[in-house]
Image (tube, rainbow, N blue to C red; front, top):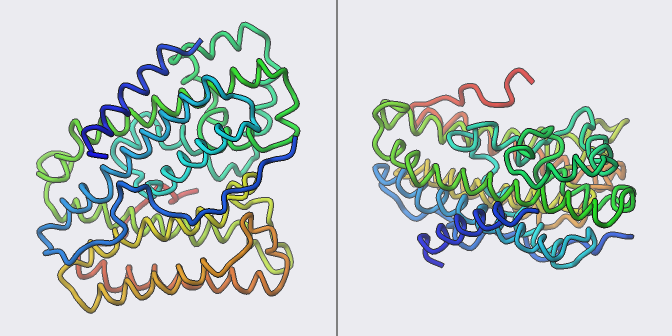
Length: 365
């Protein structure tokens, strides 16, 4: 689908949703974890001067367009299929969640505005706020439910009530599914999905309207192309840190105290899928940043190939087996592969670009 058509669909779909607002889980997705079709799965042989434009046109813009389009589709589906166990709703949710994971490392610019990324992805939920917030919402009186139809009012709700991780629990937690009346649950599903459609449409719009040009022609926010590369490099290193320390590290815990309940999106059995998607999304970004250095590009590709092959051999969708020594060893080996990619990127790619990882959103946590 051409970018302009996708973008138009995104905006009109989200606007339409904004105006229209008034048991055992199904089997987890088993299809391969692939990037949204609009995103490039590998960077071509680029000249360094082409880096930024390719990353924009092949990675960032199509990624956020896909996220906005799939989120609008999810909100549209929820208008007529809002029961948590509905197959169409869960399929649309999975498709939109895939698109988010594919751009989740790009936590700068329009994603940072008004805490949009946190509104979409409140994770890790270290204090377990999401379940309690959802329970209170589901048991709220009718006046509260009526306010959910107001876009601005719902956007003022606790961040633990918004986004993919709240919706995941609402769709896959048996207790939450049966806590309230179907009408109350439906209203909350519709409110969350419509809020996500608005948020992702706003991110995509801002990228097209102004932020992409700020990366193409540094002047104010970024004074030089080197500063643009610094931002992109920081996205790569932060994404690798989240993959190694959080998506893998949190459920691994320690040998004596594994923590499978901390695995990302474990209720929908998407934990391993997110690891594979993250690797697939960050590899072309790393390749593009290595443009002009054939040996480094080969090293980057080989390092990602090794980690991706290791992840593809795993068969534990929710990472529930971290307490089993054999399964744990395979996950720890994958975590070491990710660490090796980080070391390669930090020690060789960064100096070649003349940049450092700098501070990121994880610093100080």
